[in-house]
Length: 198
Image 1 (cartoon, rainbow, N blue to C red):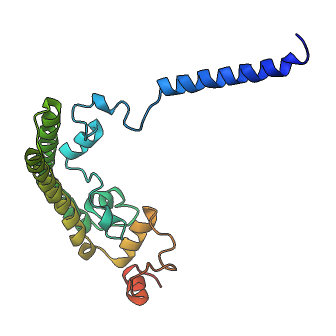
Image 2 (image 1 turned 90 degrees about the vertical axis):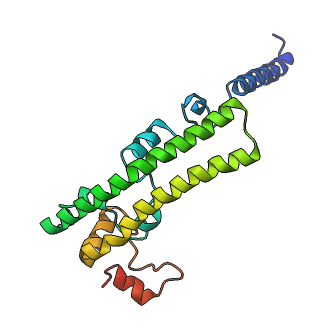
Image 3 (image 1 turned 180 degrees about the horizontal axis):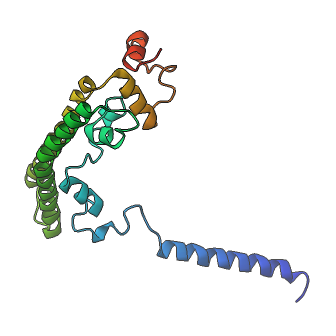
């Protein structure tokens, strides 16, 4: 090959391969939602449905959990490490049982609501008024479910010592520096006292 033409050949080859590569990327472009179209209910994964059907938390009590107020399920998971007494275990076990009994039917209601929304969009026969009705039905179930889980977090602190709550939060990996870094808007003295900081 002529030495002068060689760089031009390399440049053209590089441009060609770049365009081919770009074309392949375009043809196989995927989004975070790719594959979700195969779900029976697009807004719920199989694991979401399983969690709702068993009365699981489904992340609905994070506002309590991450503010240092434990829930019954995780307390029982850590019962030995936070040294729950037999009486505490008995009371928290009952609390969890009551919570699940209330959460399971409401979780099923939420699944049904999302399934109805799914069917409405599949059929293409939906208008704004119908959409609002379906959304209200779904959100009513979601709100009730969230209340069921969050309300249990409200009752657990009275069953525990401050030492147990502090130990729980440390074992869960929450705010290792919570004693030295008081969140904005909190009274430092009351915050440290509530979190067992010495």
